[in-house]
Structure formats: C-alpha cells, structure tokens
View: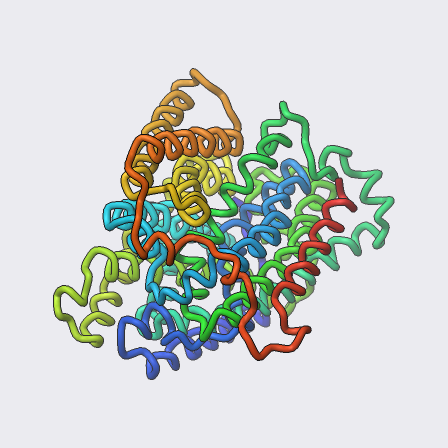
Length: 523
C-alpha cells in the first residue's frame, strides 16, 4: 500500500483537530448524568446541530472513502444514493418525525412495540444492533484504518482500527449523544471545507473546463442511469432498491434517527432533517466528481478505496493537506461515535429495560458507557475482515440489501395501513428474512446472480406480499395504539405560531425542486 508524505504543519493541524474534538466531547460530560442525557442529549437539540450531525454521520460510513472509490470505478451513478436522500428526508419529515417525537420514544424499535408488540421491538432491535456493529461501525473503522495506514505504513489493520475506536469511544462514553452531535458540527464543517478544497484542486487540474472533463471521461461515467446489465448500479436497482435502502437508513436506523429523537420539538427535528437533505445534494459535486476526475488524474490506482486520500496527498499544499485529512478522520469518527452510542442505547433501553430493574438514572448511564466500550472492542476485531470484500461501498450496501427490506415494509405498512396487526408484522420480519437468507445462500453458491439493489427491491416485494397475506388471514387490530401510531393528515400540519417562511412544507417543496433539477441536469 502506498504511503502519504505529510508536512510537519499537516501533522500539527491533525493533532489540533483531535485535541479540539476530545475537548468538545469531554465538556459534554458535565451535562450527562442520566440515560436520557447519554442517549438523547436531554432532548435539547436544535435544527442546526441535528442537520450537521445527520450529514456527518452518514458521510463517514458511505461516502468519502467508499463513495469516492465507487465513483472512481464506475462514475457519478453512485450519487443516486445521495440525491435520493433528499426525497426520503422530506418523506421522513412529513410522516414519521411527528409520531417519533410526540410519542417520546427513546429508540426506534420502541415505536414497533407501541404500534405492534414487544416481539417486533426486540427482533428489530437485535437486527439493528447487528447492523450497527458489523456493518456500520466495522465499516467505518476499516475505512479509517486505511487512512491511518497511509500515515503510518508499518501499523497493522487491527491496531489502526482499535486506535480510532478508542478515541471515538472515549468522548462518546463520557459525553453521550450531546458529545456526538456537537463534535459532529465541527466535523461536518471541516468535512465540507475539505471536500470543497479537493474538488477545487481536482477541477484545477482540468483547467476548470467541463468540456475537458467530458472529453477525457467515458460517457457512462457521467450518466446517472446505467444499463440494466451494468454490474455496479443498474437503472432498475436505482428505482426499486435504492429507495428501500434509503428509507431504512434515514427513517428507521437508530444511529441516524437518534439525533432526531433528541430534538427540542417536532419543528426543530423537521428543519434538521431537511437541512441534512440539502447538504446531501452537494455530495455529487464535492465528493463524487473528484472520484470521477481521479480516473483521469491517477488512472492506475490499485485500490479504489484510496482515491480520496491519494487526491489529497497529490494535489493539496502543506497545511491544507492536514486540514483535509483531519476532515477525513472527522467523517470516519463521526460514524463510529454515532453507531457506538446507538448500539449502547438499543442494548440498554430495549433489552436491559432499566425501568423494570429499578435502576437509577446514573446507573443507567454507567451501564450504557460500559456497553460503548464493549462494542468498540467488538467492532475493532471485526473490521479487518472487510478487506476480503471487493470494496468498502460494496460491503456496506450489499449487507444492508439482505437485512433491511422486511423492516422497511413493516414500518411503511404499519404507518399507513391500519389493517396491519402485530402477528402480521412479526410474520413479515421472520418470513422476509427467511427468504433473504435463502437468496443470500443461492448467491454464494452462484445459483443466482442479482445486483444487491435488485435483491433489495425483490425482498421488499416479497415482504409486502407476506404482510398483506398475513394481515388478511388474521383478526384486524383494534385499540388506541392503532389510531395513535398510524398516519392522520393533521400530523402533517406545522406547529402553530410559525410564520409562512418557517413552514417546513415550503422548505420541503424547495428541496424537492432542487433535487429534481440536479437529476434532470445529469440524466
């Protein structure tokens, strides 16, 4: 693996960044005395830190390393995951946020218990725990380890993973979600500045000429929609699979939704989600396009996952290189701290049930901190195995394609179809994952060969059929919980006392128009 030669100034910038992050995180310890403080920041978060935190947590696990590498290999079509997020976050703001916030749930699986029963809550909580540690945290640690190995070529992968995990776990265990969110604000700002710098210097190499980019780049790498036979992201997968993966990630994944649950009120949560959607639209230009340009500037790179750090080391001057590498570490640590806090919240609140055990608020917080440390060690031990996969982005997305479609179906039908009962929901989770396991086994045996996004769409359809069939053969659910946790039009209305320009529906419409314009410009 190639190494990166950084200037003394670069290392100084990186060191200052790490110190500042730790100081911010540790300062939050004074506000963290209970489980609600540790896991929900005392429900005091405003829209700006929520939006930045959503963006930073997402970028770290799927973008700067994996997404840039995928763009290098097969073009801008990978950004379909990014613009799709804008539509999904609008959907989230309209339909799900008011129910999550008004019910005062502490974890997303708790919503399933309120709507259905405890079986679905524990099943989904266990699944989320698995994906948070094995997919999200391990993937982020692996990406971070790749970067550290560029700095220190002699370090082994496990040591690098353990070092990153230990730093993130320290301020997460002490300061909780508040530390995660407020360090994310700094990390998101550095990340955006760093990505803009890389994009600027990459385009500078092309004399800021779009025609030069078009002339030097294969046409398929500049198209959002790829042929059905394309092995990377066929157009059918974009339409049927990407929305399912996106809905799970943005609307039901604990490590993302947790900062929304910590909002002061519904309005702040909605604004934060929409702000994150706006930030996501920039990814095509500041993170994906540099990966595509790298195909022209450094065409013989052996490992696509090293595209972004290689661009930094070859294009940026001293000092700026350190700033951007600090942003890269910021992005990675942002996901690590988020998933560790999320996993701890799930195990503590869903499985240990402190209220049933009579634990004090302080004891709940300390138990949660212990779980954070334990999950840190577990994820660090798993992450080196990801090197067996063809790419980080492939690892992250293909794993989710087999895990999440039944969950997405249960949440969607549970919100919009009152006929969906507890037994039907649980049958869908079990049946959907039985089919998922079968498809996964067949793919390993090379009996079938479907792109993971098409697999996600197929599993979503099968899960919907199971849910509808199970709902029709079981007794219709009745009771207050069905009415309280299924959609009513009055929930879509903005909170009273706001001016017209503060109406989230206006912001949602503008965000959708911007996303449509981006897609139309690159179709």
